[in-house]
Image (cartoon, rainbow, N blue to C red; front, top):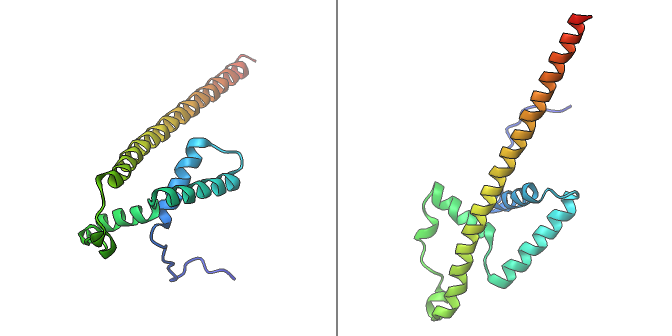
Length: 145
């Protein structure tokens, strides 16, 4: 027997929603035939990029969400390890370049999703026009007979 409504509420881990949003965006943009293999390749690529650049989109998204809802994440100071080690400008430049390219990439992805949505809407409207004209023609032929 199934219960249609339940008081059970599962807590979604922080960063999980951001990972799924990124995967969904890429699936919508690429339109792969085999979604599970595409998802596996996407997450493998994400892991490789995280190891190379030390940038974790799930952690970053969690901080952004926390800042939006609570405004606590960015009040914290840098960890003690970073305070002890002095970072040079050359080490900080790739991270800044990565953030700007991530912003540009996100803007491009949003634009691509909007373009796809508009085009699909256009196709749907054209299909509806065809269906309406076909129905009108059928009615006219039935009236003439």
